[in-house]
Length: 574
Image (cartoon, rainbow, N blue to C red):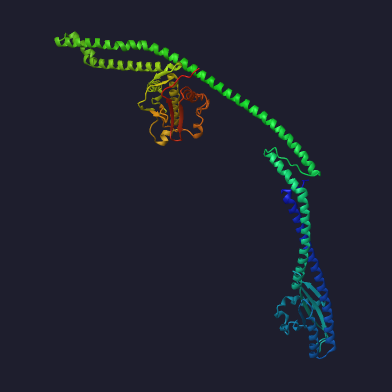
């Protein structure tokens, strides 16, 4: 069985319960009082109606037997009917003959009218039934506010007839006013009783409020404060009853909870500090490990690139250096042939046949084009070798004064194959807007790595956008990377160099943008990114060069990386 539970606080539950009980008792007393009063009145009216009806019928029967004159009968009967009208609560008293015509009535306007022609026509079936059975009927209305008494009256037979006539004495009692009066009296008595009960309830409530509710509320308040973290609050109830003993035990428990909580908080703080230190150490270890691996890879790459550049540079230098002499020798031979043709215009048939087979004129013009193509190709190889040699300085630890435009151009040269058109996308256009920036002192190899990481990310983003159909769906210009450089001066008259690298891709959400410099964070598929490229770049720019690396991006508007470097950088002191 479920225990009774109060959903309201005792301070409201007790007076509510007392009020409910007093109201219930008052309502029950009122209903009982009204019921008893109604029953008493109904019984009194019933006895009154029965008594007066029998008495009146006996008088009427006596009058009609005693007097033979019709007028004497009516005059005497009128007196009897008139006396019945003096009864309290009597609405109608009437005498009906055998034909149900009202002969005498307390309401004079009904006399000499058939009952069917009056407002009491609904009593006609009952009157006929009483005449038939010659038995009195006393009937209450449906709402018991009206009592109808129908009594047969045995009259002498008409002349020349042997059968006695049966008349009806009809009396109707109206209890409406009587019941209203009884209701009001019962209501007055009930209100008086309710006032007494409410006074008693008020005294009981005051007793509970002072001895129980107020003290329990104090315990509840203290327990709520403890639950909310206020461990210093105590109840300290006065007295020596059960609640006071509960208060003492409760305060002792609160003291122990406060002591245990303090110890637990101290332990938690220590554990949290240790966990934070361990997490920081683990993050630094992972970052350092990744940086070491990346640095080793870039150092190995630099050595490999330097070696390849050196090996390529020797034969390229030989080829490039001998192209000029080869062209001069060839020009001399062509001049000799031309001079020979001038001096000997008529060649022997064998020589003329060989000239026709060789197409000497075409050979002379095409040979110049071949030498020009060889010179351009050799220069192209020399430029690539120079870029490889410049980029291979990744492991240099000393500060160098460099032209950042050359570093950017060298990085673009190495990534040139990534910009070319592919089957899945058009060519990536490179827009360079170089400002007039001075030479800066920096770690050139590390900045090359920064430019490489940012440009690779831009290329990957543009390729990903092309796969999703962004450029085709948005009907925008083809994929493009823009590079802008300028010189800035801050409020302290310190000179800075700023490099902006932008792409016109899909951009990134604010959630991704705020995390792109976190170690190991990447949006690329598994196996295509380590999440360390931008983290290392951020460390190189901010920590190694005391600069700034920012990113601005919005969905659908591309991304821009802003690198701000000081013009002069001093090496860290040991």
